[in-house]
Image (cartoon, rainbow over all chains, first blue to last red; front, side, top):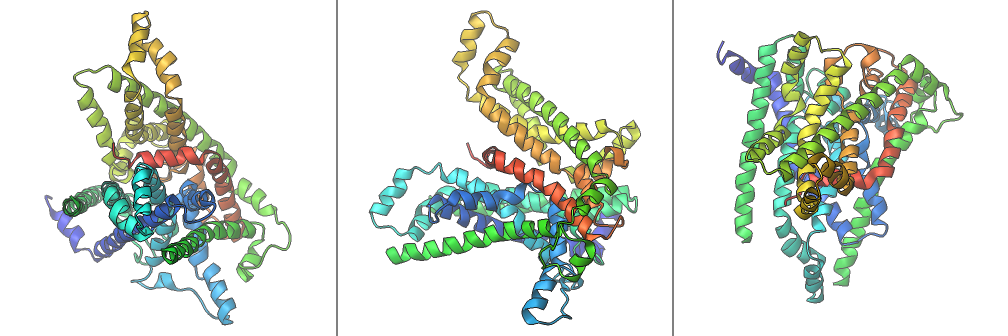
Length: 246
Length: 276
């Protein structure tokens, strides 16, 4: 007993691959969903498009659809007999083309990353929009009268005043990505051959398929430790950035 | 300066339109394919439907037991949401207005629950429910739903009720009102906006919840819609028409729900990351 489970987990190549996949999911959340969501919120807040309300409604829409539905729908799009295969066949006039991204050990996670981006960018956009509304409009107006460009306002006024919010959402994103479960469970189930495995799924299969309760519990402890570790790193970084602006 | 603004505008339209198309087109494609029989979908997924093949909907509804799942989903979401919001409002009132010495500790204890995720406790929860004989019962689903909903809802309720001026409550109490009367006649009416946000946000979360029902139940008669829709993917049938119909049945009510309550849903999500 003791730490035997932990050493066994860490030595398991499937666990290592799922850890890599999880870190990629963290990366797409922090460096994909958050900047894109912020950019969208900034554009909507500065009224750069007409009918912003409409775009806002559409971009936020995926949040209401059950992850299971989202998973099955995108599966139909990415699968070998799916939409992308059909479109590529039509464009290149090559009837033998087949979408095989899921058969590549390194790339199989890409469709999932894309769907996660699709699902959650709108949420961050909404959060940032709500917080952007708290910036006093007169500050921005004054800057505009002084001849500041949009990029200058973004860099000098809006970003500095949003750092706290961005750090909070980054924490949400990290803890959210480590529990990425429903979507992947329904989309690939970690397959084929564990190519799209993530830690939470690894825990689930070991517990409920192989009945290794102790082993599964050890994995969930590792998830918590990983989340706490990543969040601590993030907090030191954001504190350093905040100090730079003071 | 004008050139700068134009670049931003072009970029904005480009990104907004891309995102919007990425949201709408898959949904439209799903709906169109739901109207095609399996053979036509396999032959050409891009082709629009030639006739309205409604049989997909009928068959996926009956063969997939979607009626049962649908009413279960309504039951779970309604009951657990009502109880969650009720408890959260009561706790929020007590925690923000009674100023017990223990209030802060209890509040901290509740909000600590925000850090506990479903999948980190699903194993012990499953074992516990099996030992208690609660696994595979409706009660065994509703109680975890309430437990996982409460931390965030208590956070929302407490912060909102804190903002209601004490003077309103005090003058009522001087006039001889009890705390329960104050709660019913003053707090609840004033807090209506947050109550509806809480209700809609919790309802949405419970409606889309998947892994608890998947793990804690096994009978068709007590499982919910996401689990039912998921069964179209695997062993049951590989009829794409049925699958697309089931997906459409799962999506349409939620899209309508979203279009009606969008602002409230947005408020719920935004409140989670708003710094006071």
